[in-house]
Image 1: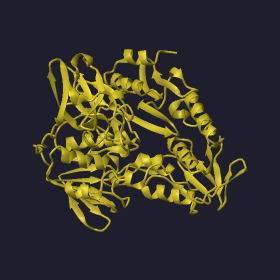
Image 2: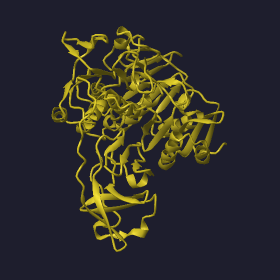
Image 3: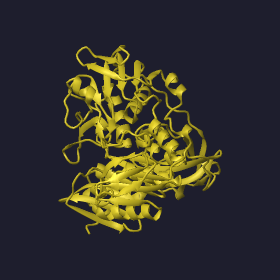
Image 4: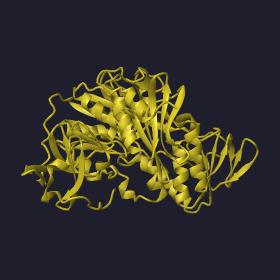
Length: 515
């Protein structure tokens, strides 16, 4: 997705003085026509590909943490020793290169071959993954990378192979990303990995005692271990006119295609909901020169997540791009050409998109008798209340080690990371899920990055200038930093992630001092 990368820095095949690379530092260069990152950690020197395999982020602008490097854009993590993508959203490794020191200079030589995958030592007889979204797909891939060689079935209900869902409201919807970027993998990948991908099936029942799932076709599948990754379902409107063909939700590739098709002839769009999806759709439709009005009952967009000051600044950003807001209002009915609001006013609309939240898809788990609490309850290893059944992604309510509470997070990166952890635990690895929740949201040329989880807070502290969208914002209760949002400060976001992992409040207070 990143396209061709320009080469910069020294030609590392010709050598660079070893003294130019101090402990904990990185150097961007190139070798053999490829961008290469040279890094020194724990007195060892490593050379890896310089661009993240997710969206091509510049790893040289990222952060070294032990023998790993983290991408500044979306916090993917790579091993400097093996190149492996050790943390989502990246799935593919970066290339590793041989490094040699001679006469006080460091030389990058040829590429190193990828380490062999060893067979898993503990294998269920078969594994079934219900749901082919972020969590399900990442679990399937991780199982094969971890050496699982048993029967592996991935069940999807959306009629497509797994897709890059964040792009459906961002670049793809805006017309800046071709559809060939949207599948996470080409169709042949699943065949090559011996992952049986069923793309348009629904599981109608789960028998956790007999370890059998039944499909809508009547077919049954047995499993040794099962992952519930059923995700979430958009909340559909029930007001008069919401059944009309120009009224859309956004969750799947089919939904995004339908909005694109409708936008081709649309002049006026009404977006109902001023959350992340609503505003991303608004930005994407403005890129297609559709007039947009956002309707929401809130006084400010995103204030419940990001606070009033950043919510107001993002509203101004959208208004500067031509988006109109009708806040403090709700739609009352929809006709073929208009949306009537609860104050009696009408907005012209030949396209209406609802982005009013989602609900976890727990129907299958409920019928199977699994423990529920506004989602499927899982423990720190992502195990549900049934033996050999795990849960991950939007549907899972899991223990947050930082707050001590159980939370459910509806974010792509969290789902992908949970899928990977669940995969390892289905193989008996006993790995706790303790990653700091992270997501990003794109608004024109500005990106909001968010770490942690704060449903409420006592105070907000700010470093930088919120109005200019160059800031780091900490959401705090007592002496604890619950979450941190940044705009234009990728490095601070990475530093905050490490500080949260280490429970280092002093470091977080240095990043964002008390106001």
